[in-house]
Image 1: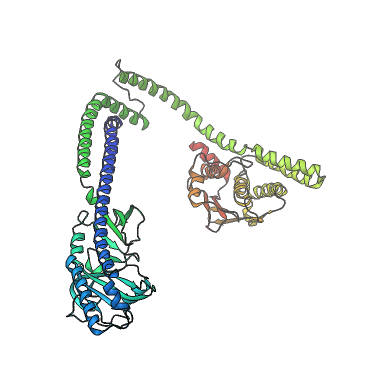
Image 2: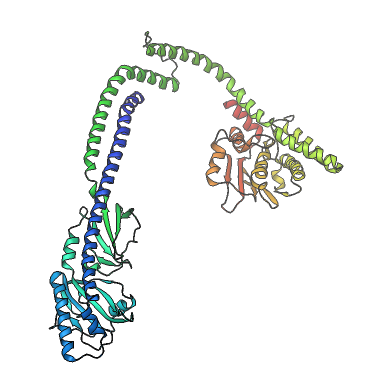
Length: 583
């Protein structure tokens, strides 16, 4: 019933969810694109205003540079005092007219590089400190006549005193028209309030802002006045880029000014795309309505179809629990009725089959264990016979004899002529014969060391129990090595329990793989004489000795594998009889 309900529910809501998701993403993308265009246009407009503002200041500086009166004061060496005073007066009038035409200019200064004449300034009442050795003065000289811009500061560059309001400046070296030598330095100090007020108006959302950085990536303008002159924490973007600012998607939109500075807009998309939230809300309402419709349709359909199926499912669970007397009463002409008739017929047949299977189960369990003992891997026989063939071609008759003898003894050992169980000593001897064959195959690169007390060699164990473990150690652990392999087998006892540990120095087993070796029903050795694998050895132990015994596997991180086999010291025939009786 729940599955039928889910079918209608998912079938109704999934298309709506997909279409709503795609619609919302498309709408949000369009909104983001439009926001980016508007923000880019705003940055461009601000850049144009700044260029015009700086161009006006630069033109004012050119008026000073092109003034013949200023140049004559700076270049003429021998001039009468009266004529000098007249020229100074006219020069100051020029500087005053520049300031009148540009109210944002605080003052204009012209310095004589040779310090022969006084400093020219429109403000004749204000004296200034000696500036010829200041950093900004030297920076202007090094610019070779190019305009040098200086950032916002609360301290006057010229008077070296706090102004109570931000100022910035530009300077240029005045060169002689005749010799090309620098004869003076001009500096214009500008009130920054007008520019700052214009820039403070620009804002993107609640947290977005715009800043201006010079060519050294230091803030000329920032909404936070304390950041003036400090180095920007952002790299200068070469184009519009996305930036993750405080875990919020932010656009960095740059524009380069004519003086080499950069105007950068920091645009938080989350705030500016808030309009897309209405689209999201509308989509959610559609999804909510679809969910309600799906619930109603699903409830109606499950009442008509699901209830009979639920009743039949309950009958199936009772039959699974062992009650084979259950029968379905719904046997009408509908599909559900046909299913009920099929169920009744199936239960009747199962009841007959279970009685037959119960009688055969004990024999089947014994046959299953016996079949495991008779499995011989054709791949092992092929490799062994192929190795013997090559030894025969090389006239290694003694090796051929020993290999054939060992193979024959192994084949005889796999047969149950003397019963399912053999002594531990006989099993170890068969293991040594198996290693004779493997050493011929791997050119004596594998050593088997066995430590078994004499009193334990008479313990009975299922036939061919240890060989699959050693086989796995060779093929999956030692064969991938480039070095000599070592397999160490140790037998110990504790009270009525026997423990056989088989260790190798191979490549080891991945930790995630160890558990599946014993639990996975498909896990079998793909190579080897018995085609049994670890799981079948584990199963054989538990069939004969009970669930408390079996196989455990350990593999340290530094390589190597240890397989431990535990079983009861009780005689194998007695346990075998008990197991068969229980089966």
